[in-house]
Amino acid sequence: MSTVVGTAIGERGKITRGHLDLGEYPDGAIRSPVVIATGAEPGPVLWLQACIHGPEVVGPLAIQRFLKTVDLGQLKGTVACLMLANPLGFRGYNRLTPQDGYNLNRVFPGDAEGHYSYQLAHRLLEVSLATGDAMLDLHSGGDLTITCHYTLFHNDGSPQGAVSERLAYASGAPNIWNSLEPSLAGAHFAAYTKRGKPALIVESGGGARVTEEDIARLTQAVFGVAQALDMLPGEPPKRDRYRLGADAIHMKATRGGLFLPFVAPGDDVVRGQHIADIVDLYGDVVQAVHCPVERAWVGSIRRPHMPIYNGDQVFELVGTREA
Ligand SMILES: [Zn+2]
Figure (cartoon, protein in one colour):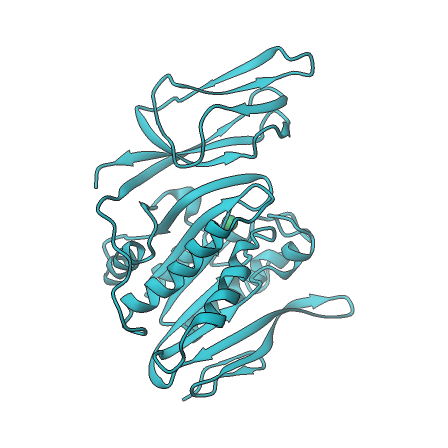
């Protein structure tokens, strides 16, 4: 049976296109492009999506590269690609949904009668669960932040949580983070896993630019996860060493000014380390930022030299766990 997403209909051995309606403007449909890659042989369906945060355009670029390079003759099963999980965020180049100001990836499982973002979350969850046997959600830091290369999953001890963890290692990321944090309980990947199917987020890059390395990493994650699901031949990437994470903290500035970090995404940091200054327009340091936890790695960082308000997030520090 072929996979159908909105107007896109899968066809054995072909790449087909269409669109999925995800809400309504006052004058018509809010919709996302959909591409379905159907292999020569039947197999699982991987739900692949991008731009749940509007500016995170590494995602659609990586999906495009996957679709241009995958050998459908070798593919067993289907990759269903939703190019824009949040079309309004994409058009507004906004991490939040411009219509109602919510972070879409914090309001799952959503509500069919709630605010726009809640209705969208509800629809995304139902369509992705009805279509996919597993989900891969592509992220980056977008415009305001830069993330290191990491994979997030929700292993709560369930069988699908364990599969999520196995797929995380296949994604090729050197940093593997089992996030059971309450702050991510409303994320799509967590809701998907709680509903019985494995899911991952893979992150790389941001800071209002896209590098070749970021596109290559997210593309590799698609191939690696497909290999781990036995949808493509070959072994997924394997590293000698992984850095594990948990219990992230999100540090906010307490002063306004210009942000001058001394560490980069992915760096290891220890308690007391001087990791950034915030300087005022006279060049005086108004806040020296120090690492408040014993051992962590920099999951994401505010784009260097950005003007910031007090209260803006400047660091995501992920607690280090031994592999
Ligand atoms: Zn994101």
